[in-house]
Image (cartoon, rainbow, N blue to C red; front, side, top):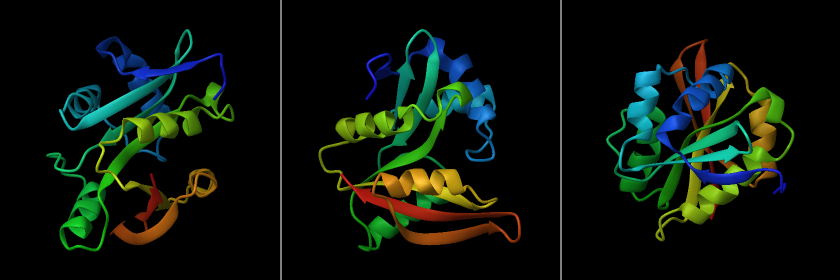
Length: 169
């Protein structure tokens, strides 16, 4: 990790910057209203970590198993674990980096911090990446970090599809 920034927990004052980075990162991450993002980050099952120097550079939003979260992607991992097909996971709902901070290994540092913050029972970090619209940069990034494909889903035929990825902790 570079020494000119640090990873720290989310603070409510970060919400405007986190929301701006989220919206700047669509369609790689889903758009959310400020209120929806605040509610998601504020759930007890959520862990949001921020890369910051003088300004927020990026964030990763992780969810523990058992969250009351209606995302079909989150539910896919939960259902897989419930059926005995998966391993205990810490789910990355979104990771987003400010355009000016991309290429500085901020995302890698955020994942390292998320792994360190994972519940003790966690065996894998789970996430999804859009395959439609394609997100080849995120696929390369996750492959470089050791993520492998464990499934796929089409949410809207011809418009929205994802691949499900995991990597051991």
